[in-house]
Length: 446
Image (cartoon, rainbow, N blue to C red; front, side):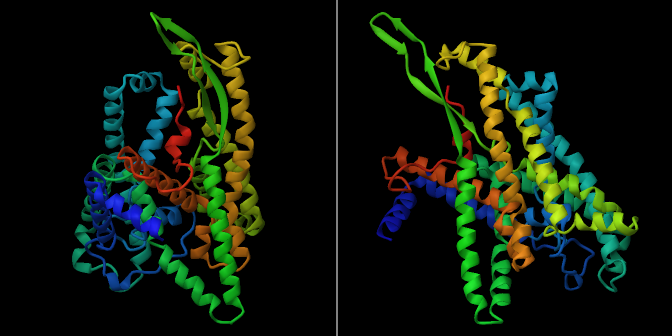
């Protein structure tokens, strides 16, 4: 406890770090306030409880911290920006023009960021239109939910406000990244996810308080949750270190190079993207659940139930497939081999050039398989928790996208705090070792 108090004092004594923390908290407070401002023309007292939303709707609501179900001006949250960013990231891999632009340094990255913003506006307009249709369909039959006097202006006003709200959230994320603490976009998503934790925790505690014996079950659930969080930390930080030597160069009386370093290859290079893609792909067939009959309709409805065996099996297969696909898209062994060759680096026992690329690619394929299996297991943990009696809201924190994002963002934020402390010759956050975030684990040491 004394160590913790001293660490907090050290953090607060650094003016720059204190300013970053206060600025981040201010942006988060503004975001949470905006998440409860209802769109004009809707009676807040008539809002329906959409906590049981599944598929894409549940994913959007979890990322927006409940703003989606609240019909808030921030209902779409940061999701359109994420969709645009993912698309542009894929373009930098698949389209030569964007590949060249990415290699131009800061100027290329600024161009890509500008294109991402333009694409975000287009995606937001499409999603806002769909969301307004969703609101009309949900509240059209509810007397007084949509104010009749505002009906002629409802569509246009919601379209403008939702687009402006998403762009404002995107701006806040960029400002947090520049002047605050951590990655702003990831931090906003994490705050949205954590906003549901207190209510879900109380619901689970209430359900287990009916009988005295269930309190022990609740304690066991918390212990299992802690163990799962520790496992997710290992999955996020797990790397395979490939030794790299650099040739010695003697200039005058000084020697350069000759150092031995490691090339860290992540066990889970794809992050949470395979889980997000898998949820989107499985959600598509469920659109037709109202049109099918008999066994086909029952099978489609099973895909909306996270605790269904068929859902978990298909979901796991899709996650594993997307993990390999996304890793192949973002990881380029040939480029790494060329960078090593240009910097006079080589892997002991492996020839430079194509043999090095093949060697790195082989290792990456071997470690991706266990990483994909573990990622799929984490993805189906909420469904397994539901089958063991955990409430639906609280079960989402036992795995899946929510848990991976929370653990990853918290690690990144703590790493930045520790870096600031060590730069000023303070002790780190831990007595032994250093905290490694996703960025540290994925950085290639050249």
